[in-house]
Image (tube, rainbow, N blue to C red; front, top):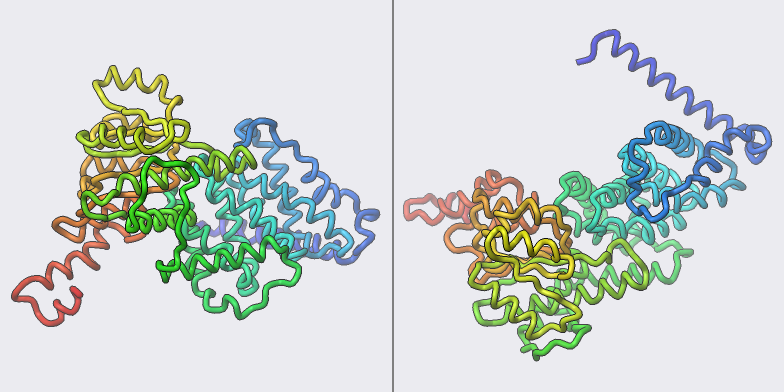
Length: 479
């Protein structure tokens, strides 16, 4: 609770802030198209100082900008002025102001959270200048950052920008909903808590507006590329509710196996999850080919990402290693299957096992491989090593091993960071529905609430309904 003196100071600060905001906006409106000649210093602040920002070379994460507090404070002040006045400046200045959109997008990966926040607000403020051009920048430059597996900062900056845009546009966001809701869906299970929470809140806002999609005309000056993207994203919703509409996925590399029809169906589904950054459980019975299905999508994704990165250098296609975690008796099986079915230039498996001294030696040349095959127990023992690696795929075979979320092995597994998470088991639930919570806590952290909340809402009512002496109400609650 603030003291009377602090409350008085806070009120005074708010009055000063509102006064400064009103003064700047009134000045812009008063001088109109003559603003640059009458008040060149203001143009220097809102345009030149931002346009002339020197970004570090060969440092995509801008680590060299850390501990430069004075520069960051000056930049924040300039960006705050832009946010306040841009919508009040004469339309003759709009083309120049829109030139700053790529700068704001780059600043979303700044190491200072305050800079990322005000940059996101500047992008939202730019919507009033030209919504189509601003949203095109969001689609082309910001949304790819949401899928950057190599940097939490990139995802934090991107989701903050999306939240600000949605808050600014309100109902005017409807024509762009399908372009935003699918990337957000992939972040609902982000392992970074702040990204996950903001994505959930934004997703909840947009999903309420989904019934309006299609009833509001698409802006006429959207590019053909964006219109095509909108149509393709709408296909996702159709396929999500009607899985039979998912088309056959063609593995882009030569594999030394012929898939059976039901295996092709499984690969189609895994490819659907991959395309939309979702995670899943493959529960085919033992002997039906869960391994080969998983290897098909794993190898395909590695190949596609490598090709895309060579062409575009896009942050969502940075080559990353993958990891398969399985019981120790299956390590040799996985290694053999990879070597048997997948070309050596696509997946290079490392059988990570042995005594501590042997594993220490393996780490020295781990960079020569792009697929770790390791047991649950070894992950637990070497979690300090594995938790520092950003993985592309994390596949858990016989995933019921982590059914108890309180074991050290389960807790270690959930520290692994991966762009795609897939779990395999012929028996995902063996004794209690509560075991499902632990699997989802790995796949989509927070999606089913806490273990206590899940037990109260699902597990206990189901168990109570199975009691021979339960009441009719308890039976109904357990359905």
